[in-house]
Amino acid sequence: MAGRFDLETTTLAQLLADPEAKAVIDDVVPELPHHPMIGFVKNMPLDQLLKMAGGQVPADTVAELTQRIGAL
Image (cartoon, rainbow, N blue to C red; front, top):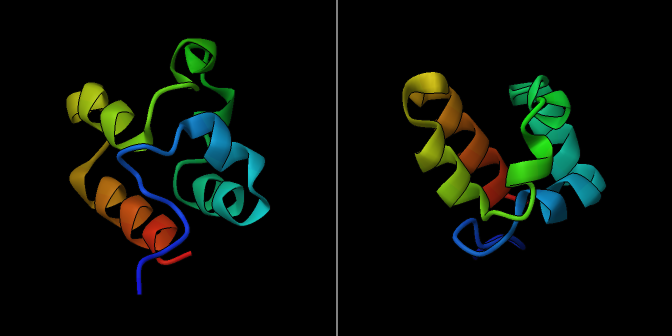
């Protein structure tokens, strides 16, 4: 069964507005909601944002974040 969020279309703002998704983000990448560039990227789908981040986010962190949000 697919989760509630399609990471190719669900924006970071939508995830941050959801208490369960925000809790995952806060646990896996706690600096993300407070990053200085958040205003520029919050309306991007999470998948696109993670690709744009390139090597700034370790692959294991990306995998954990996408797995846990995908499971919601």
